[in-house]
Image (cartoon, rainbow, N blue to C red; front, side, top):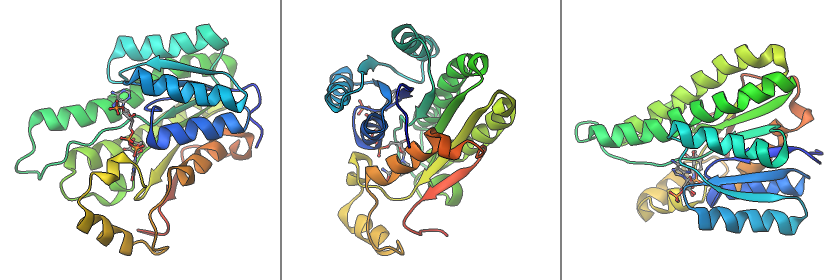
Length: 246
Ligand code: NAP
């Protein structure tokens, strides 16, 4: 899969899945704008991209803020002249049982996942429509399909991302812009390392492949959906779960 000369923008890319996505996109030839709340982390990943041999550019962005998201996408275009690939990956959890969940916990999760994905897609799609080419990959979660206890906010946001993906895919198909989503299962990052060990082990035992996924398992699916190997695939959701919930 050749992404030589392509320009990719990845959100929440300072660590975890977003970092791995940025590095694998670079390994396939793409220049990468590495967006994250944490600018030090974003710059470190951008340096790793540059070491691979393409151009990396770190940017501090809060994807849930309209002006911030717009300037993030604008700066990618100012730097590289175009955007070919957008990966909406930034994410947080604010877990609580439904009867205890605060409005703030609900709003924070919806704002980062759903509003952030909306704002970045909207800003990038304007350019992709004009260029009549583009790939948008939204990172949902298997929680959006099955629902997780203690995650009404997160499960709702991740299901919402699937709906947004399909609606945007229908709108953008005639401009040859593909919009797809990935639903990761249980992946080894800081997000899941925060899960208590006993629950973590139980979740791993429930995976048919009997192992936790790695960020690179998700990155490989993102690269596929960012490449011309997926040119006739749009509005789709790929589950990367080791067989869980098949
Ligand atoms: P992670 O290690 O916590 O990384 C998430 C990144 O997003 C962090 O660098 C974080 O920055 C950044 N971020 C948070 N809020 C942001 C905002 N408003 N604007 C910009 N960046 C922001 O999590 P991960 O496991 O790699 O998750 C990546 C994506 O995969 C998320 O959308 C997550 O929901 C999804 N996912 C993960 C799993 C899993 O098992 N790990 C499963 C299904 C789906 P700070 O660290 O500075 O806050």
